Length: 378
Length: 97
Ligand code: FES
Ligand SMILES: [Fe+2]
Ligand SMILES: [Fe+2]
Image 1 (cartoon, each protein chain N blue to C red):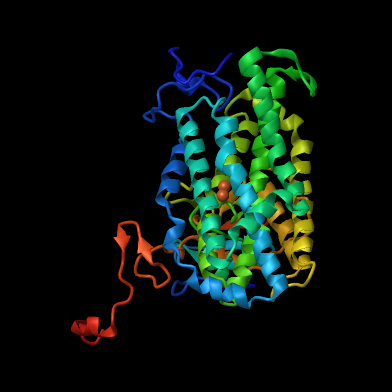
Image 2 (tube, rainbow over the protein chains, first blue to last red):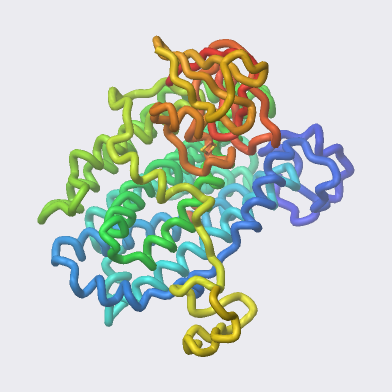
């Protein structure tokens, strides 16, 4: 079956599964099979922010004062995040839109992916503001071995799914010979399995892989360094918490048979694979922490503490999708991070000193104290 | 050991409930969600959004009744609860995953 941008068939979308049913036709939200996805859309829209609203001029000064090994930690994390959001800014669209069957989920996928493009643009904003030559930083992403290793793991499942869906849409079910690749079996079973593993691997990407980097950004900010960056990372972390909610819902709806009953069987069948995806990612993140701190740690953080945090957060994320925790670490070794991750003190408001522009236009921040004299003894 | 997490209510108040956590017993009110009350009682619970959408604060609800004034966006597994946004409505027993 090939993809249609406007399916002419008349069908009841409330009876469709999330994926691999009919292609969506009317983008309508008056009736919804899984209303959670529209709630996520609304929340995501309410979180809208622009990188340019955060002023980074102090970060530039701070960055120059950092020790060389601290600059390595900071830039390496930004490069890794750039990779992750490059993938996320396109892949939910490319991989999931051709197979989605519910209007509210289709729109969530687009809203989700759009918010990732804001993250990507924010890295350029940060890098442009703190180094003289952003080119060097970005060019390294593709050649740096430590990042390349991770690029394979984060894109592999997406790419497998995209390949299978392409074959399905052009050639249909069956065994197809693909040059340089051999025979590929396209069955509803292999398609659904590829989908489930992709959703699991995306959940891991957003719910675990970002957190080493988040921890480092907030550890700098605890020392009142790179605070503009920390502000941006807080906004990104808030978005990511919604994104992981989305993939947790997809996984739980599938695994508990509340969507496509066949997906429940596939989830059961893939359980060990999914556990491995979590455990392997945790190991890669611990290795990443070692790479970050190879030339020296930073105050409040070292590879061991970060490794424990990775294990801890992996347990939390596994339990959220109904899996047994796999690591012994039962306590958060860096509980201070939660005060940075909490959303209610993320404020993007024009009256804040660090913010130089606002959605509706420039705000004059250089008001003289005398301008306020009329207010008396405030 | 009983810790009073509520500021000005007596244990016999119908709006005050016992929260059992292992060997600890904590008294909480219906005035605010469980999370801040547990924190004041010195119990550390993981959190992130404190608004019901990230699922970080999920804990086991072994028995008893809790309610959510606004339906949270996060998935709540059976036998679990979200500490950040649940109002305790009866004596309850909780545990960690
Ligand atoms: S802290 Fe996010 S759901 Fe409770
Ligand atoms: Fe992102
Ligand atoms: Fe994301």
